[in-house]
Length: 250
Image 1 (cartoon, rainbow, N blue to C red):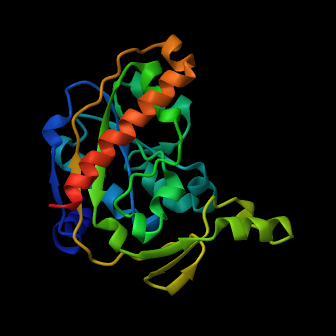
Image 2 (cartoon, helix red, strand yellow):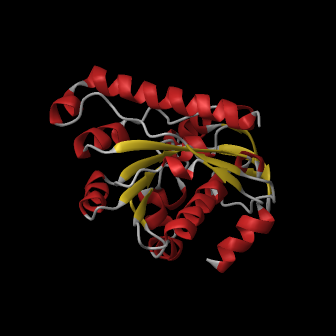
């Protein structure tokens, strides 16, 4: 916490609001994150949670399975601060402990989206979190931020080209499909090709906890209704985009 506090107060100079929107019951926090693999806005959000609630209110963050395969050491450190493997069974187990869950559905496509799209919500069309909320009958609380996507500058994503080279024989690093293949400007590489770790620049970050979203229907029947799931997803993206538009102008 002291280390995170230094980055929070002095390096990223975080401004945050909206924490009063979190209800007393367990919720599914749905974020849009930025800034490459460092994802500083996500880390600062976790720090904010612990600073406010300590361990009196548990929260678990879903982390991509690739991290556990690529860097077990870092994954273990993340696990000690509440990270669990991104899998529906793990999320359900957390809810059964009466804990809240934090998920960033956009994944790699979100954190490495081009800098020109830094103010655009990109959840990559993934709707598993909607089904999770409907199945477990929990509210969704959106989490948005600005600034972190200026800690590096993504020029573009060349995944289609990299995928074609892979089909021609180029192996994936650690034999894992990265899902993105960005070219970005940032530390420590200067120009980086591929989803390499980065050192974020000391750019101010703003975060916002948005009002909870409650759906009309919940339960197994709602989960199995594809058009209903799609409409719930569109509603979440729409609400998050409105909040991001507002935050980016302040």
